Length: 333
Image (tube, rainbow, N blue to C red; front, side, top):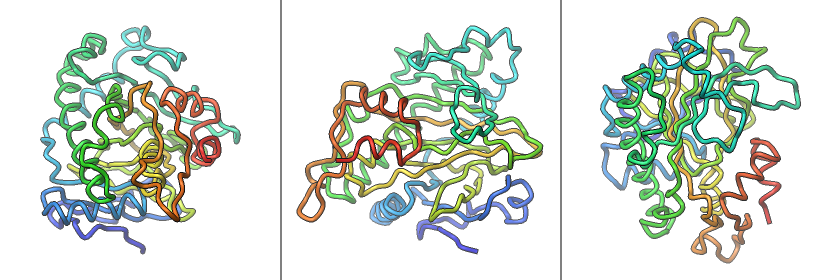
C-alpha cells in the first residue's frame, strides 16, 4: 500500500490503526496517507517538508502546530451544535446569494453536469478581523462566538507561518504574502455532512480547488470523508486526532507560477456517522491583483497565468465552475 509521509512525521501522533480507518472510511479506490509534518521540528527540516508537500500534492497535515486541543474540540462541538438547532433558529441565515458573506447554504446550490447528488450544509462566515466581523456572527448556540474567536486567530497564525516558510523555500521575501494577498476576510466554512446509506451515489462536495490562498481545515479525528485527487485516483485523507489539514488554493498556485500546486479534492459522506468540518480560508482583498511573482518568472519558466484582480478571479470561478481545468483554462496565458 502506497504511503505519502513526510520525513517530519511524528510517531507519537501517527495515524489511527488502519483497520479502524478502513471500517469507517467511505468508499474510495485507494487509502493512503498525506504527508504529516511536525511543526515542532527544526525550521530547516519543516521548511523542506512543507515545500516538498506543496510541490507534490498541495495537501498535507500538521501536528504540534500550537493550536490547543481544547480550542479545536470546542470549535467542532459549537459548529455541530449550530447544525442541530431548530430550523426556525437558522432560517434567517439561509441564502442563495453568493454575494452575501454570512449565510447558510445547502448542497442544492452546487451545479453538476453529471447530475450527481450532494449532501452538505455549510455555514459561511467572515471571521477576521474579529473586531469588525464578530457582531455579524450567529448568536446561537451561545458557545459559537467564543469558539470562533478562539479558533480563527491561531488558525490564521498557522497559515501565515507556513506562507513565510514557503517564501524562504522558493526564494521570495519572507513577507511576500503579507498585505493584500492575505488581507481579505478570513472565511470560515463550517460544513455538515449527514450520514448516507450509499456514498457511491452521493457526494458531500463536488470535486473542486479552493479559490483562496491557503486553507486550514479541522476535521474529525475518527472518520474519513475528505478525498484528494492524486495521480488520477481519489485518495482518502487519514483523520489524525489533533492534526490540521493544510491545502493550497488557486491563488497560491498562481502567485508561485505553478511551483506550488492546488489540487482538486472532494468529500464523500459516511455510511454510519455524520461529519462536521471547519475550514479557515485565507484570501486576498478583492482589489488585490494576483499574478506570478516576478522572482519566479525566469528564463525557461515564463509566466503561466495572467494577472487579475481577485474580484475578477471570483467572477471567473463562479462562472466556469470550481474544477481546476476550467479555471486554469480561463487564466492561463
